Length: 292
Image: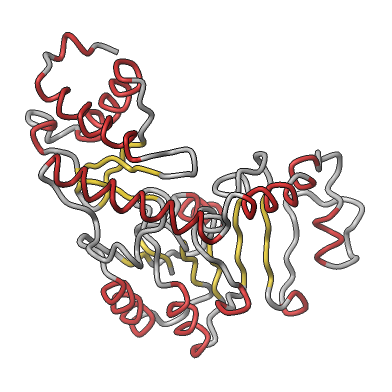
């Protein structure tokens, strides 16, 4: 069981293994209560559930899902839960002892600023499950940690850099930095929505937004492109990069085309003011002037 907001490789894995995926459809405006209601109904109406896979923070929409409540619902029914927390650590406070997921995975290279490939896998009860790496090496048969600890000739440099990344994040403020990034993100998103006369995917900005937020784009950008919105979004991304030197990810969530903004310690309010002005400027320009 997973939401239609989850990372696409979950669906790919289902196709590879032949397992059946039950997808819970959610649509904007998103709310924690709406997510939990849809999830509860899915559990009630699905006969056999082997595992629930849920994003802590969804990749495309940037929504923070109520995973603690989702985990609790699953625990009362004896259903194991895998939480994909790729965007969580370093963006929002994370306490796995409090959440108690069966499995939790996250990347250090995103919001913790570690080198790429640095990540962690948390297994609450290692003795209860047989979890093996994709590459079998010298640790085989010696327990989960041994099997994952030595995998052929992999480069451990990224993992060895994690303590320095954690120390740097703390030195930059730690929890205070995450709160600052959240405040900048929400303020910028609301201002962009006002500038473009559009909306956000959720009104629950204090709990469902971390430091990533999708802002709906002006509908005028898509006049004549109703059948190829995704193509128009990709063109917009390239125009922003080529002509305005702005890197922004486009997103198409629940039928709403938008831009996904992110705020890290090196971003400030002026960055998003420039983005807002650039989109308005594009609306006034001839397409021939914005070739990419």
